[in-house]
Image (cartoon, rainbow, N blue to C red; front, side, top):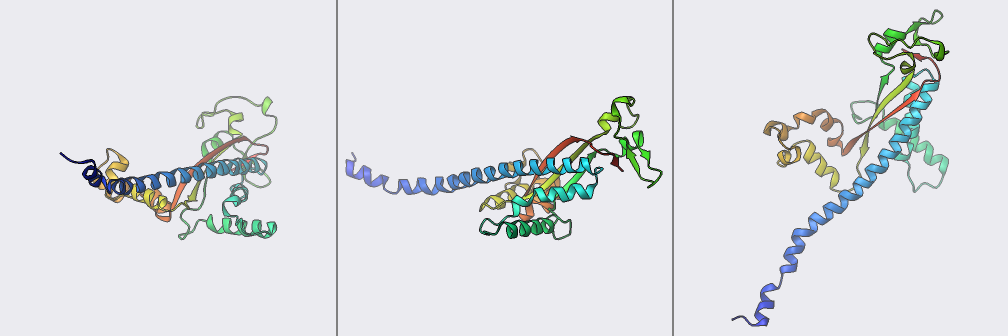
Length: 241
């Protein structure tokens, strides 16, 4: 029969074993929560930037260049250096970095992508009018209450819906929390944990990331994660093709 002293000796080191098992999981869990919080705040910032870009675009004929410039101004909060006390210098520097980081080049595959979902080629085909002075095709924006509400044969919408500007923005948010970027890259770009990460997929897809090859190359391999936002506003000027 064991004495109480012998029983206590046999339990020595049990806490260390438990700590070694639980500590890495707990640290990863806490870091994940922090990163999720940052991603949520980034999504709110991107939502505001996307809506601002759409609103500016509605005033400037849905011009893609104007929309992109407005979006980059809205993305400035992602690039500010809080250690810089000079506000003008901080904002100007952040604006420059935002321009460089979101200009599509082979070195910046994660650059913000803007898709103009509406007006689209079908709406221009149904409701487009050629401007005799410039030769450009536009969708009329005036006197909508008096215009026909007939549905276009291609777009399947009427003139009022054709005057809605709808954009989708995909932004590559850079993850700053240690370990999380590597874990996500490992999960999304294949590896030994691929089958568990993706579920019921083929071994080939899980090992080589074929299912998400584009996202892997553009975002996950660069420690970034794609965040998407959409905005719909009514056009305040004629939309040009």
